[in-house]
Length: 108
Image 1 (cartoon, rainbow, N blue to C red):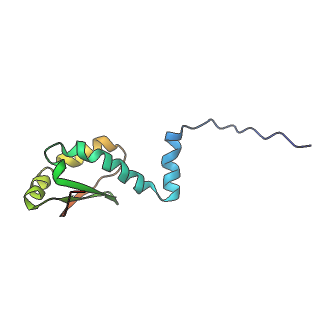
Image 2 (image 1 turned 60 degrees about the vertical axis):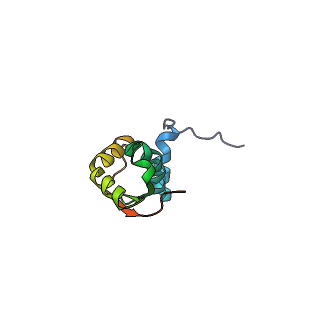
Image 3 (image 1 turned 90 degrees about the vertical axis):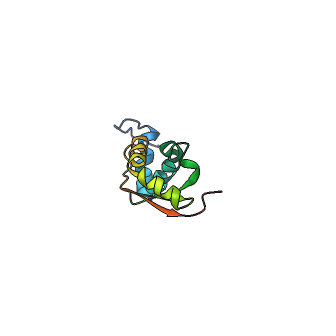
C-alpha cells in the first residue's frame, strides 16, 4: 500500500521571486541582466542620443555600448553620470559600475 505524499511546511513562492535564484544557480543571471539593460537603454539615453548608440550588454557591472562617431561619443561621455543614474533607477538591484563606449556601427 502506497503512502500519501508528505506535505511540506513551506509556503508557495512567486515565480518572480524564484526566477532570479534559478538564473544565478544556472549561471545565467548576467544574461538576464543584459536583457533588462537592453530594454531600458533607449529610455535612459533619451530620443536625442539613443539613435546614435547601440547597447551591447553588461559584463561584471560594466555597460558596453557602441557609438556612431567621435562627436556622439563625446556627447554620450558627457552624459555618462546621468545615463548610469537613469539605468540604475530603471534596473533596480542590478549593479552598474561604469559605461564603456567604443566607435562602431549602430545600424542594424
